[in-house]
Image (tube, rainbow, N blue to C red; front, side, top):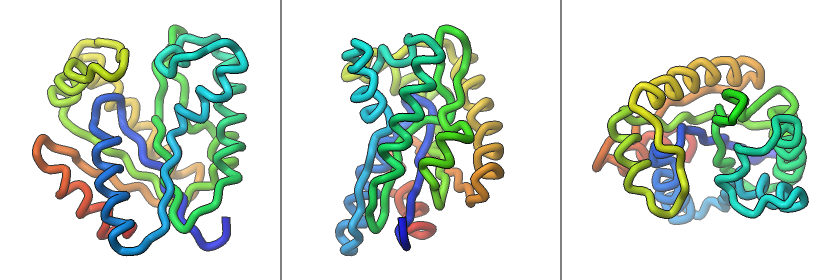
Length: 191
């Protein structure tokens, strides 16, 4: 992708990543930036439908090898996309029945070829509340301790992904009632 930014935005489920991204996109469009968002999970679901999976929340319950294959096929499709700014909405870790699967392993990173990596974060308490109140998804309801574990693991993966891809990392807090502050930080760095 010549000249365009490829921004990977990640965060644990329930952190408010989608809300922050929507406002970020609106601001970019107001400034005349041609921006597209691709939701990695949606592209994976399109690939998984070939295996009979019809619900995005069922993806993480697939067999590990099938999931890795689907993950790579989705990365190849996304890697071919072009835009002045392409925002890739995904996760650093995926909770599976076998344990945590890296959301951005080396093969996937190579296909995506990102220029920037952004982690959206919030307190474990806020994430738990958001997960519990989100009726649009069938999220795993996990304990506060497990959410803390996901956040810690994501932070560890963040530095590994940044090192592997050779790209800068930004951590943006999405605190309750402060979405615009999170978006301001993104605009300052990427807009």
